[in-house]
Image 1: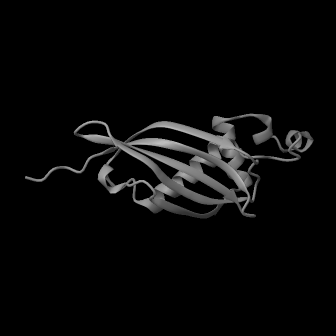
Image 2: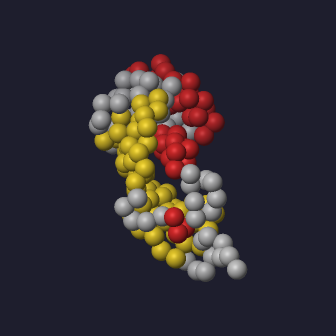
Image 3: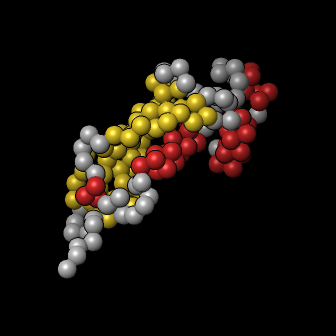
Length: 146
């Protein structure tokens, strides 16, 4: 997708996807090795009462689903500029996440690209709001034809 393909209010539904114990431990072992994410015995004694997913992992899996379904990676994406996320509930092994990604602002940066601001809303399998945030992404403008 190119910058011109985006408009305020445009929304994508993110279909439910499940997060496994193995995904949680694998991601955390490499990128966020806190005991709450990798040590089940420790996690059982924590205030969470069990293993929970790393927040960045939940965000990245959600974002991956967006890219798979939106076509945003087909062409035009230059770079992520900013991300912001907030988590309201932990994600546990076996939980499913779903939600929406919506365009909340677009603006031209120059003659070659523009910035698209997106809002993310995530819900668990019970429909409980569990994460929110956004991302600002730079997209190439559609090439001009002669």
